[in-house]
Image 1 (cartoon, helix red, strand yellow):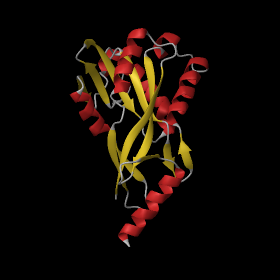
Image 2 (cartoon, rainbow, N blue to C red):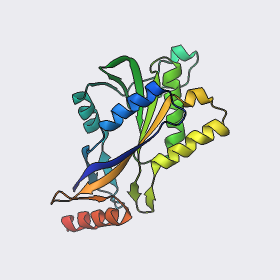
Image 3 (spheres, rainbow, N blue to C red):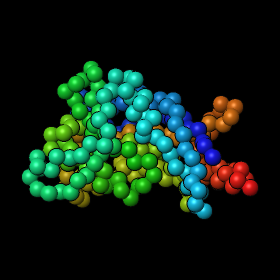
Image 4 (cartoon, helix red, strand yellow):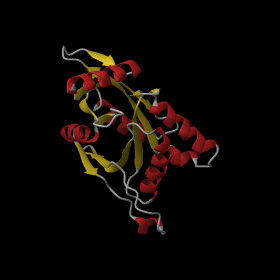
Length: 211
């Protein structure tokens, strides 16, 4: 069963960020407006809704003047030690700002890995692969336990890193947070906020369609 989504409102957190980083984030955020993508209900008993977001979003970006280097890896030699092989979702360069490379991490559902998303972006920046970073995450990820606001979780993690982990304010100022609202589009073209009730409805319909 396929489910159509559209992005509603888009919000950002650029507190402490440099103006050049904030402006690039604005350009990236504008590409999210009314962006359409799909999800599909899994075959397991949990009937988890799998979201196909990344590839269609990169396709849209490339039509709006962005170059997308997908699944880049950090150059470990430039960091001086073996830190593993972390990958990001993309490094973005806009045609109007070719000297500005943004490393992008999209976190659609797992709030527990947000802290490492920050670490990965900082690794790409320190290695010289990017000059700034963006974490893109939803304002509403609905599941059987309720709804998670990953954008607010990311904002908290940023504060934790500054206050309790000793990450320099200047480093965190190179990372922008973008949040997007997920809305489900019905057959008549109208959209509705994806919440726990909608998630339950979709799972019930998927069961009915297979019976």
